[in-house]
Image (cartoon, helix red, strand yellow):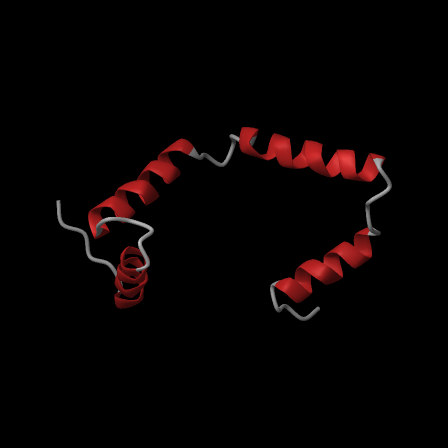
Length: 81
């Protein structure tokens, strides 16, 4: 099989290999495909530990108001609303 990547995708993959994250372009693509195969839109099992950690923080009084959380998220993502 032959797959065409955009120049941006190829540069990113090459940079990941150069940084030592993968031993080859083939390995990087194989890892990406493997990740896609193991994650589906309806499988949120991966999120459970994150939700549990967040709930524990709230129980300890470490939470912040929702509007502040949204401001922080938008700021982190450099989105203006």
